Length: 191
Length: 327
Image (tube, rainbow over all chains, first blue to last red; front, side, top):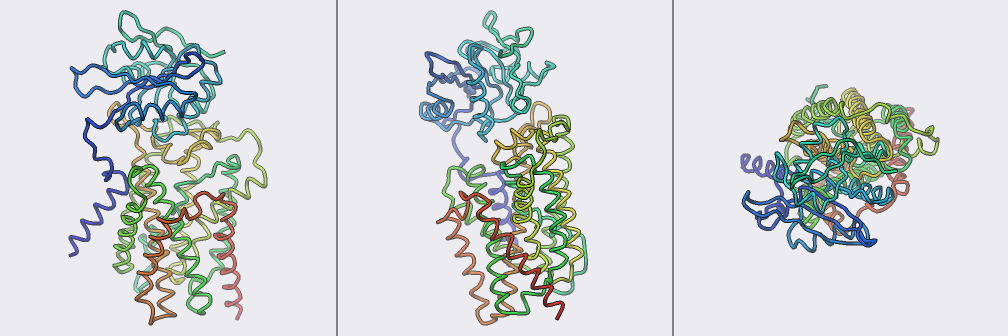
């Protein structure tokens, strides 16, 4: 009885501290792991691009695209469109299109910072998500993770929490050159 | 206590976890955040006389006081319990009904209450050492991301802000120490006060590390500031989002606090109402389950409205203690 009680308590502790949870048991086919998010203004509406992690190396990369009036609408639409359980906690980078106004960028970043799902350690970069997410990385298959690898080597730290606390919207700029995602020299700052 | 337990590190550990309690989950509150450091220090200083004045055996002297104390202890217990269950419901187990984390956590409390006090003390020692180690190690690891400049507020702390922030620490943590003193029946007051001092150090480290990491503006935007602080820690390329370690602290402190609240209320009730004592725990568990699943407790209410329920009873108990002593 003592052993049973002990084992039962251990299972309960693990369940309540996130080591194992009753709801997280989902087949990998039922989930979409997001490795990068991108935002672009199109015809006065916000478009969200989400790069998903491929299940196998041979699989074609899926990029989900949704539009909405604001970030919240876009995230809600993304969850609906995917038809899968969206996991944002592995998002490595957020790409912002350079034509966005500072106020829009502020709004997007504030929403991401408040949302517990999206890591505060995600790297914020400038670049066109539409073309970036279709490109290839030199080291990583996922552009979100390629951006992390590249950004860790730069002097500038553009992780979400550092951007939000300093209120300095100066990020590394990425571009596509010959199908390869590359870091552009210098930083681009919103005026 | 059983009467045989002497002042020990286990009691200090239990006291520390009890004092930290659920306050670590939500505090500092976003309102008047610039005054949080001053508020915290003021709360720590102002709480000490109350803890010194309170007589731990007071609820055992009078039936009316016993009932009032039981209600207060259960109120604090359910507040801590629901706070962690809400956190579980939002973050750890978001897609299953609230009833399940409620039952799981109640199951664990039942498990801790089944055994004698010394089992709870041993459990506190294990959880306490792990929790203190995790806070200190994660604080040191996060130093390279932190900036001391961010701790300096742009504006001077206001009296109103300091009062609000200190009320939040007193109400949700320090003043509830009277339950712990009753649990110890004043025999281990020294251990409780040592635990209080350790709790102050731990909470201060958590507060300063969070503010030095995020600054005031970003901290105010976060629902769970300490866990968010842990989430930016990464070890190399493979290990990131270490907030799981903060869940251990949340869990340990809330479990110990709730268990001590319920156990102390049970002891006081059993002392005065021996015939009805067998109904006490089943009734309490039923009430906890019902209140947690059917109501939001006071999740949506601003803290200022619920603060009197946390702050006034301990003040009255401390005043009555002084009167009893004079007699």
